[in-house]
Length: 152
Image 1 (cartoon, rainbow, N blue to C red):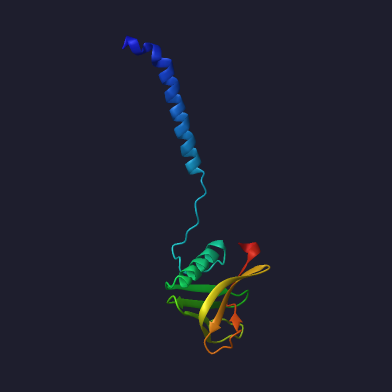
Image 2: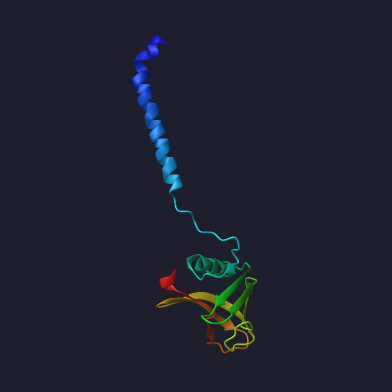
């Protein structure tokens, strides 16, 4: 025991450094921002960055030939929701907009069946753009939803 006595100060300094290092790592881990996550990934309601990322994921999966589905609730200022049901099998996108619960005079459903979908950048907005749709002219494009850039 006596032969280690001369190392006690170095051992104490080493222990203190380890404690400081571990405390620093622990504090850094506590203060790390918690990534946003939602329980229902297929439900788009906020139209924020997380929802835009989810739509981008859906488009990426579509381009890879993989299927996906989403439901979007878009509320008007003084009306009921527009409900968007999106289903794709990796080849065709079925995008249904149900405005029957909207009190502003829009009563009904419209379905777009399209072979192309992308995000279009139009200045202040990112717009989901559907094209190559059934029963529509070749140059027909529709933007069923958009995301304000200043709200992302």
